[in-house]
Length: 416
Length: 89
Image (cartoon, chains in turn purple, orange):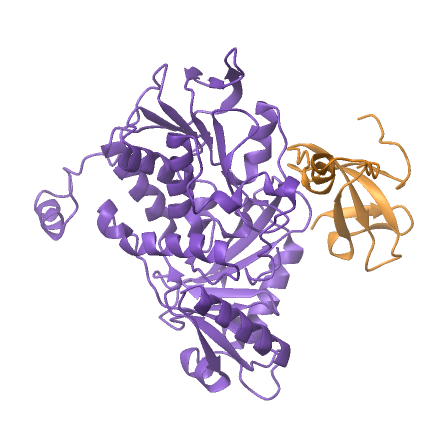
């Protein structure tokens, strides 16, 4: 059924009793043309684009837990494309452009809010490096503008601009097209659209092993719900990428860390722009519900625990209050962590693995949410065609052996 | 907060320490191929479960040591000297 204003009226008149299920919960078939492991944003987007762009409809998404329950439901919902290098700018801006059309395409309100993101400069050196950053973005055709101290103050009046400020704000830069999107809706929208194209979304189905044919090509997966055959399999499991890779017999240049975030109680609109202060580690936006969403930093030791340490909670809160002292009266509502797949150059890996027929989309680290559309688009492309999409060519696993890294660690703006 | 037992200073809060990742990695010889060198620099087991890693008591005595820790529960299974062989666990 197509969602529309008319459908809402019809729902109101029928006591909301006739809404159909948004997607089916089918039993797994014994064979598929393609299997995607991981029912988060990247996996669901991959399945959707396999069906829509490549006409593959015998596709299954296998999810160990529930749909969108991993990092897709644990991020701070920021979308942006303020990267430094041309390869990254192309990739992330393609993603942002897909986001811009996605609500209409999926017929599901992603609540994309391009409210802009301001990176704060706290020193003369910050101003210099931001000027370079903005120039690089302009060269790559991405929107960006430098802001003076007064312009920053006008956009975010709650910032501490007083002379006694512990971290004085000297200026900053804005990406106007950056903003937020409703994270759950991204998973649900892709799931609903993929399901409508015939994709089987199978939750509570854990992959426990891989099988390979006589030629060495992948031939299927062993799951908690029995074996399922396919000669084209894609992995999109973020922090658990190394676990799946080990099952398939290879290693990745990935370390898993807990990335922490939290929200305050909801309050009236007080902040209509996303603020990022690389110097202090504060990363703040206000959700449409009114909560202040605070992120996000890593506990810098390997972890598969979706908790995050108290030491870091304290650090994030201290950083936030240092630039936004008025928030000190807000109560903290929830705190959580997601397990992210960090690689040394802070750029994703999208493409072939050492196992023929097995492909992977990982390495997004702390920034996977914004990459969901392009991650799905390019993983679907390589799964369907056996060769990489041109946007994903620089982002191959091989780069860690050739040394051609795309080092975005600095440009991503937060410590990785 | 997670606590670690520094072999010199005793049990302290995690915030006094810094983790430097997987320990017991052996540097390949200078004759290593690009592939071996890339594997050495970047590729890791990244296990879900027991992980042997090196830590430094940065805001304390400054000494290095090895820790065998569970990456799911964060339980510390063993603390041992940097040059000691891994304990059987």
